[in-house]
Length: 177
Image (tube, rainbow, N blue to C red; front, top):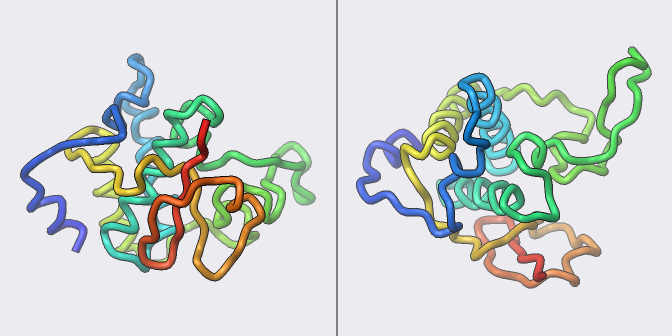
């Protein structure tokens, strides 16, 4: 599904304002770029692997919208892994995320972050790589959203944001200036 989408995409455009690669520092080396690709792929996988292409691209858009917003960190990985940490009980020299306090719930839910479905993850990784490197560009179908949640939860922050769209089982919001 995703490989066909990438292969069939002829027109390349982007409405977030800048290609994802523009969010990377100009001196970014290949190792840094690879880490950004992996962070985006893991976020897309854990947040929207059960959704269609629109859901995956919406999660990618929110991640990048945060990178481009001065209220959030300046890289994809910093955005994905943003949240409070504490020393691990196994090794107090390592910091671990505080459960249920992260920006993206999968990162601090206490479960393994290793993708279980390698086929799906590899497809998402290919899409993430194409997005980050600018091989393809996407339209921000979330209309600038910086937040989202599943439709079966009601977070308190939602009433302070402007709803933009619902895609699959996620509701997307802008954080107005």
